[in-house]
Amino acid sequence: GMGGMGKTTLAKEICKDDQVKSYFKDKIFFFTVSQSPNVEQLRKMIWEKISGCNLHGYGHGEMLPQWNLQYQWNTKSASPVLLILDDVWSASVLEPLIFKIPGCKILVVSRIKFPPSIIDCIYDLELLREDEAMPLFCHFAFGHNSFPRGFSQKLVKEIVDECEGLPLALKV
Image (cartoon, rainbow, N blue to C red; front, side, top):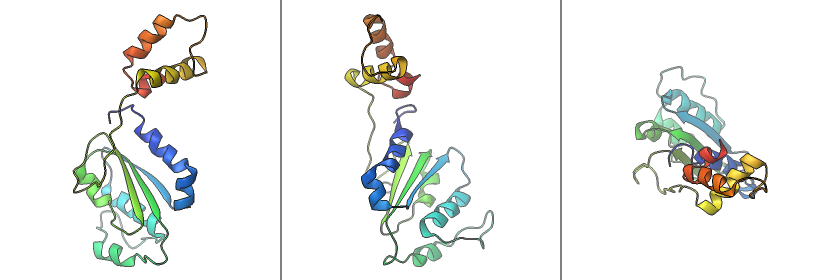
């Protein structure tokens, strides 16, 4: 979805969900990838988090050996892992960050759609309908979810309509 739709906000809320937390326990990791990341450094940090192994032997610019990552993972003792990669801008950045490890689920947050060869399942966020947008606007503008007395309902509706269902615009 486009910027301002609430993708990152939803991903952060998933991390707080009681069912998600009870399943993944202390193995929920959130990484902001951004537009121009150091992919190898990020890959190293991700692997250290999900495996619990420190990779001191690999310096800046050194490629992590893929065979080593695959064979170090002990599926019997490993607990499930949720890895959230936020603000991913390209397939070329995403592909090296995906670890195909049993029990490791990866949620990718992006403005673009990735092909099924990279991502198994895609969820497109939709803009808010008017019945969803009005309470959100009222919450941020007036401090409660309903239309307050004393304000021009026509003006409030015009503002909400102008925001076209984009959550960030409604909040601002």
